Image (cartoon, rainbow, N blue to C red; front, side):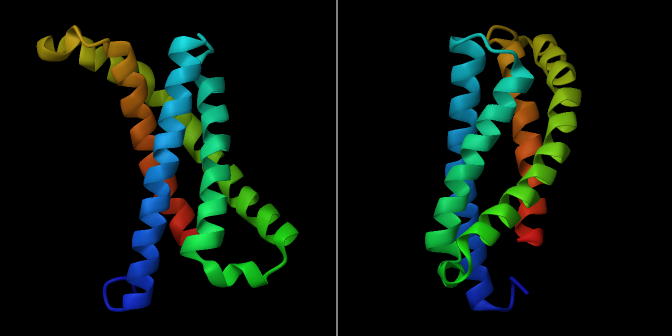
Length: 141
């Protein structure tokens, strides 16, 4: 297990670092598409997810799980993207269900009302969805 096995603990920490980088890619692209290019939030979230998954695949293959390079690349890509497709199916309804309630919540908090509560709501919903899908991806991978 992660707590007792140093190799698994290191692997988990690398996985988390790759996930953090993926989150930067995810949030960066999401915000760029949604707020600068005015793309609807759900399609922006899907596109940013695909970009983050691609980044994560490459980093995980070469750094987190270097032993995986001996496996067939085509099989590995299809397996990784299948797992992440399920992750996307988990993520999208969570994001869609939380974005408006969280935006409304932030609009009612006086200290946050001037900080674009809609954007805060979208990003908070994305953070919850990313966290849940990260756990799914780690334990499945």
